[in-house]
Image (cartoon, rainbow, N blue to C red; front, side, top):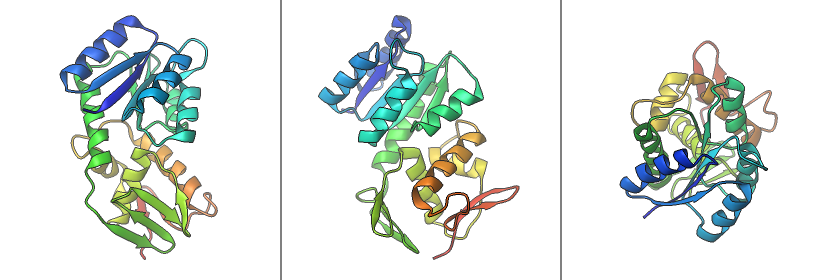
Length: 224
């Protein structure tokens, strides 16, 4: 049974999310602030974290950044604010997805399932493009022999492009491939994930040589 940690200071949200995820077959643990979240995270090592942006004390963004420094666990951010700046910050701090309140519990469960499928489902492959190497069995990415730590969504985008080197994909097509179903999220999220990937794999992320922009369309990974 997959373990999910839900962090929110609103009791009503915790109850709704806990019930929906429990009904879907997940083991759910809850915390109401940053210190509680960090303690429970160390104790149970969850398979996914659902994290509210606005928390008493340490913010959800700061918690996401701290978790990302020690773990590749998938993170879904929650916020009552629909501001694009908040969404971008959440992704830049290492979140894999972003859900704005009020939300449908069914939609949240669907996103959780999709993210966990991406973590589990890749067949064993070794892909090399120049000095970039991807091992799907271990989910390891290396550039020039050095390990690169990607979020689940960043890894999914890079793997999809690496399986089709030289082929250009539009932002909607990348979203569709990422979710393996009806795409969720907005196209701006793709741009943020690509920016994050470039910072991790490119010698100069402002002048990329691996993950290339196709102007007015989308992105492609260079050919081997």
